[in-house]
Image (cartoon, rainbow, N blue to C red; front, side, top):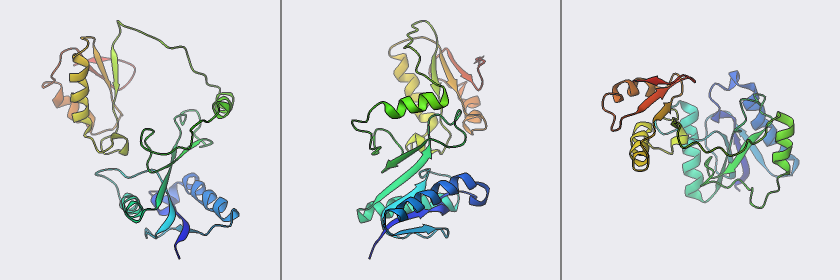
Length: 222
């Protein structure tokens, strides 16, 4: 008999250092038990077939330890068997909500254009709650036809790149932008990323003029 839900606490890197992340998964398992469904919490990096697998984060393409290897196996095997995988990830408001009050839960992946977030026909009530709780609001649309164009980079190896090379993505975007405008382009990096070093060599081979890099709010011409 296939278990209803397996929650992979082992999908967290260095679980003993991340009590909040582990608590999130354990609380999910507790909620499953409250419904009367069967649930297993895995701590041993062991895949178990289940109707629903729950992991923290998703699988990166080329880096990671045992937890990433496990995530890849879970995602692949669940798909092969026709079962579901749910990932839990931080919200877009982490800079204001470091306690993890708001999280993202999605079936089939973390990407808004591919995964199921169960938000079809949802009301604005939840957004209003977040606005009030975190003290944020949407500003008016701004159109600046004279300023620079900002390209924000992702970490090399991060799942947000959908297996694309960040540098190949960057080159393609510059080419695409240059088909429409000659406005300056600012590249904003993630500090500590290996891309920082790659860009230092990229600067002399760039396919376009007026391309800059910025690791802070200051823009550096190179």
